[in-house]
Image (cartoon, rainbow, N blue to C red; front, side, top):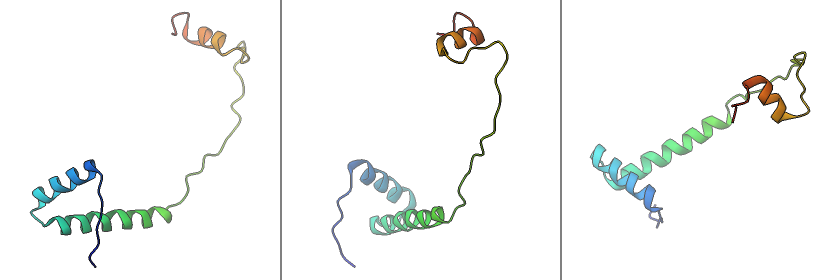
Length: 81
């Protein structure tokens, strides 16, 4: 299929670099990287979701969690900034 494709300058430069490195034609290089990206996207859809399970950590005795600035000073000292 023949079509016109407008590439951003940075993408075109990277493709030209890859074309020189591989020794393949520009067309082959574009098709290779399009296939690579499309297949990667398909694989990503089927990846398992990463789930974070929250758990209560409690509070350390003697620390006031209402004032963040004061809390940082208690934990890291007066030079925390």
